[in-house]
Length: 356
Image 1 (spheres, rainbow, N blue to C red):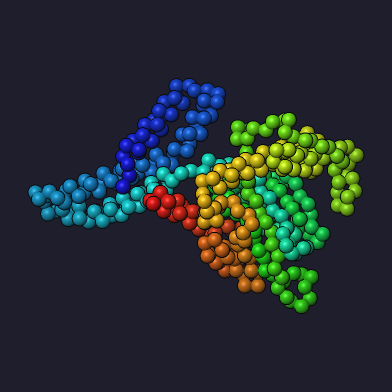
Image 2 (image 1 turned 135 degrees about the horizontal axis):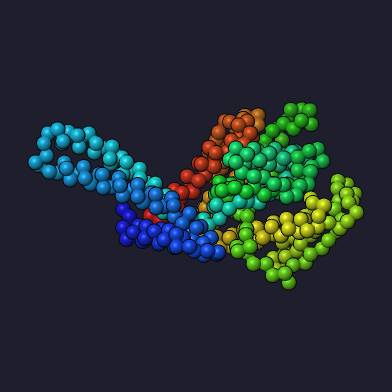
């Protein structure tokens, strides 16, 4: 089933890293080795469990093949052999998943961007509801959410809201949320009880570190201005707002949430770095796949991925044909059932590719 020499190589590398860390590696070497060891933890645990189950199944099979085995021992071995085979099959599946190619960004935090789409004021209200649902999910996971920027809607909600979510494995859980989210519900301002359809777009960008993206200062145009509030009025007298234009890509980031120009610049650079990192990842994805639309989590944000139907209490993810009648719980941040199904589907597709 598995190439044993490949498994041996992984185990040897794991032990080698442990020895180097114990011998006093420091600085960047220590960080790099620690990260590599952390990525191998799950695989090594799965290899050891698989090999232990394999030895147990082989030992029982050898016992049953021994014609001289007494009756009591044979009955004991026969009683245990089915359980041992089931355990071997389970550890085999676990190891298969552990050996799948890892997305290097899965352990990173994210920049979450939610924008109102078609639907006017109702779209802004839904964008606000959707953002708060993600915020609640982050709280349930023990992640930290920090607002980066917001543009409120006229009747509430947001035309756009951007936040940093930090914690372990954030991108790995949320990366399939990028796309168009459609809502069907009766707005509070609707007097005839008619259902309106509107949408919000979500972008989930892996939070880039300095080592992930190199930005040349010569490629940046940085403009300062006074921060503005609703209706265009200036909210402070100093030029603390920052607009950064990355000339080669044309990406523009505007930040005015903080009173400090320095903090606004730092936040804007963080967002710019993550957008550039995401753009490069998507470029590589396109090169690796002739048919990106067939890949769950490809990052194609032009396609509707989910519908939230409030009158029926229904949420449907169109990529995997999953429908749940628990919309109220989802809007309270209970996304795990949907996210687990998306991740499982993604893993199955990767397994199919590896078997092809």
